[in-house]
Image (cartoon, rainbow, N blue to C red; front, side, top):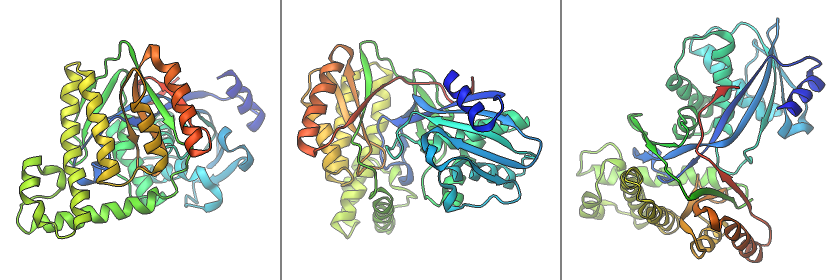
Length: 385
């Protein structure tokens, strides 16, 4: 923080007034279920985005990120809140400001802000949701706005959908905004009903392994998978009164899967139904302290994402398959949209060093470049420091 305060003074020529932090998130299980009307099971992590801020007396914003030093200061005013390609990363906080104003909240002056994130970009740990919710919390704080966290989460998702143009679900913003130390959130993406579930790790830690492959394919394949699931749902709706695949039990799906005309779509729907049921089961196992059973469900989730949903790819499969062979690994799976990004593993504390060494070595031999590893804790949501 001292370094960041010095940097703020160097960039803007004045001292910052307030400091804030917003976490990233990792989804423990429940992948590609959110837009299929199912459940997700994420938690906030202790890596995230820091912001230092000083309010101004005019309507201008000056934004600087330590992560994109070459871009320098990005400036814009309240009069022109548009998505501009040249403004790169700053379109995220800018979009949040616009969504707040569009929703009727009074923002009548600008500020200077310095961001620093220790979540790797493009790794699928929600660096974008982290900066969106961080900006929302800052706006609430400095303008004294009467807005609750769920409303801020919705405006964060709106930023992503309407301002940035990414058709994502609400999980990322929800997990970041509603994060609670040592608890994961079981969230029904249809109704936004949620419950906190304790993540009791006595002799274990969560290890995130980064393939270091940017998720170039993820967006186009994401839209393709959504389309395949929507077509499967339409086929099922000829007989069943359902609004989403997430409403089906495994038995109902197995009885009616013949209604889905296309075999590929049938596989996609199978993943959505089975993964949703796995997620509900995972919550029960974790609540009862059955970590070993929870780990088995993580492994099954990865197999389904690999075989039925086909969103893993060589890099993610290599990391997970290497992890499964290591001593002390309770469970391991890809997390996020897929085609790159990260895996999440639960590993015995006394085996972590061996895990990182062995998986890292095997990955480099097979893929040709290094993976990165982060040991993370389940963290609190966004806050003023």
